[in-house]
Length: 111
Image 1 (cartoon, rainbow, N blue to C red):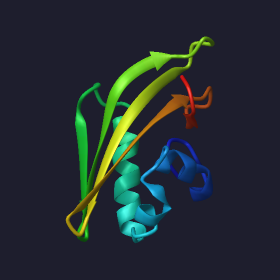
Image 2 (cartoon, rainbow, N blue to C red; image 1 turned 180 degrees about the vertical axis):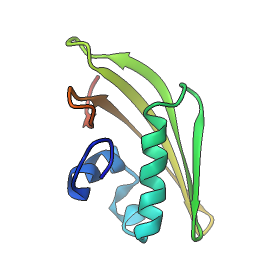
Image 3 (tube, one colour; image 1 turned 45 degrees about the vertical axis):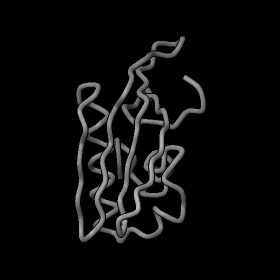
Image 4 (cartoon, rainbow, N blue to C red; image 1 turned 90 degrees about the horizontal axis):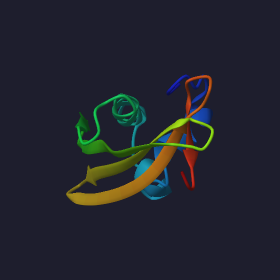
């Protein structure tokens, strides 16, 4: 799982953020999903502006944390930008996630 998620289904919402969309995400095989997941995991702790790049079996992408913030109750939040290239077509997505008390990350609509 991702970010202390123990089941893939729990991590899936975070992986998609607001996401790359089902069509793009469903084109990934298991290894590509894991590469994407690892890039997102790394982006939760990377310096703002650092781009984490992944490449797996003909699919490439990047994840960049573009802004940090905190909620009124003090949780750390990050806004992410993602890019995925499949067969020369690039798709972008933006989304925000906030860290939960147990260390996992949860997608949020508004920070």
